Length: 227
Image (tube, rainbow, N blue to C red; front, top):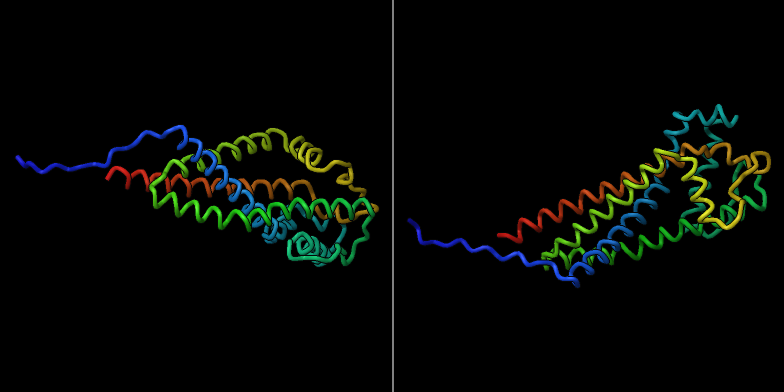
């Protein structure tokens, strides 16, 4: 019988400070994931181009695909943080209330875009430190948060997308300028509600994909910890 003893590193219980650090760090990773997901979705124009066909936007709006694409692209360029000019649609007039609303929308997107620029390097440092210290609880917390919040939101969207859409606008915008008149702001005719629902779905899918990566990192560190 062999006298060789296989030693395992003891698994330490997580302290209150460790729990707080894991949750706080997990929230930072989650917020980074959300900011990146929103920014990617904003700039992922193929989603809209696909919806142009699936939702028959040309038929419902009365504009050609070329006109629709050109004006949509102008809107997306405007919402990019690197764009400093005013919004001008190549083919659509725009009311003053419409202009104000798009300025407010740009500010909202800017929060996510600048958030991504700040949180990406911060999260990278956090991840490197967690791997070095084998602090897998960070990834567990990030994974749980990144699953729980999108799943809850997904249930709400599935149950009543219209309520979610209206409530979001009422919470984010302190006016009713988001209620467009197609006669004064015809751009609304090429932006159906279903497209925004698809955007929300893509954001949640990207966040859920990130949560899988967090859980994978957690399991990998957990295996290393018992060796």
